[in-house]
Image 1 (cartoon, rainbow, N blue to C red):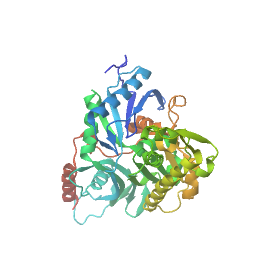
Image 2: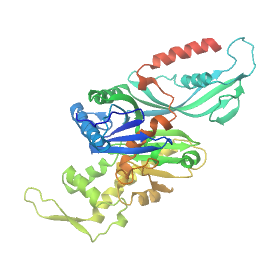
Image 3: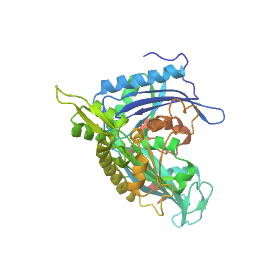
Length: 423
């Protein structure tokens, strides 16, 4: 594979967003002022992926290679290591709790308070991972929500405080071990060192959401080709996340079936003529449909096509509302809903969302990275660009799959040891 002329220094970060419709590679540089600058980006159609699962490994590797080469040429840097994103129907997310006693177990009757240290926090977080998982699943992310010290709640950093009991409330993202391992192998086969996997909407949130939105309440809806990812933030933490097994490709399929045309033609029609809100499309503006096998000439109005699109998008939004209701967030989501991902580029989508959901809705375009305005301004780039910020701005406590060293068995052994120590 042709590489750039410069090697990847320690201040260079690389993210590869691997989806069912596209593969996007972004190369960024961490500047002296802690900001990130985009150096290069490459995007190609995805092959060999469907609903987050690899269905043709060789095709996927070939497309990853093309995306990386394109980014390398723009940045003039040879990619040596990268962090990648993933989503899929196999991903499940749950909230759990882990707690530790702070008397160090020196005496069964000891009730003296203890100053909380980093190791206490880490033990509480690790205890929260002691959940029963299917043999084919592993923990992808451990995202702290807040800590409790005795009866004191909503603490973000308890280190240095005193108490008798420390409790960690966390959000776990669980994924299929085989899916993660196979993506890792595809990247490594290209000679690229694997630095970790990130759940796609978590990466997107880093460049689409601001601190106020995460704190006062917002839902990020990442619309992909075959899946729609829903992530609810409140109190500056992830409260709920899920994967809906339907995405923008379902609209393409609807158009293809209703008009009896090929999928590629249906995709072109969706992009060029379709509106998510049919009332905002003209019944007077018509376009010709392809003629099949000498059949009669046909034409259809933008309004008629948009009716199919609106029906499908309303279904997706209804599923989104159902997922948001499961979050059980106290109080309203002040900032409503942010739409991002390639599927969010559909015309008039925010207007339909506001009407259907009854909430404030905006389009989530990438920000917080310099140099993106000219080459990567659209929602389809958010996950790849978010990966550039992951190592410096995420609060992921999980090291199990990322390092391929700590497993659930290891966590269980540690949990047993700590229980003996404290009790």
